[in-house]
Length: 280
Image (cartoon, rainbow, N blue to C red; front, side, top):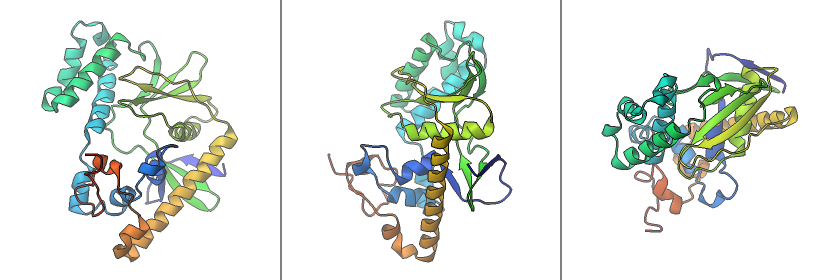
């Protein structure tokens, strides 16, 4: 790595994140369902009222994920709550689940009950535990050769193992697959936040209670990730600049890929290429 620093941005900088990487290229095996136009809506047209309204509306899976993480957070604000017979009821009230859709309520309550019976963070030396709704984290300013960009990484939880290793834990829900790219972004972030500390990353599904084996990375691997993030950031900024100059070429700059995935896209109601009837 040529240069990296923990620094709160005082001026605008190009950026990179796992989310942007995911919008650029999907996990292996999901290439056929990837649509770059979604990146265009989220990142190039997000100031348009109709687009902004859809972008800030959580899908059911997103809502479940946010409430599930908030539930874990609330359990650990007062560890004694885990010993209460009505622990789940108390957290349910804190989350105001009665205001959510029935599907969301059912799944989140199941998650809360599962976690209460198996509180994986209980007794851990927790260094950081996010609610999930804090907004954008403080960016890390990275310089890759002559290119500077801000790295954003919203880490769910960090705890310290008995041997001093920092364990980064990312919560999942539903059928979300574990993506190693996300782990490597977190490891790069940890190397900047906590230099000279060994770090590992693991994913834990709060519904299936499946915990993957911890992942680590060498310095050369993290350097390769940093190079790739810089490339993605630079390419994304070039696409945005091209769109600002030629807004009529939106579909050429961010090409669509209509198909089954349109049914899950938040922008299907305003997308000219949406094929929401596929698979119906």
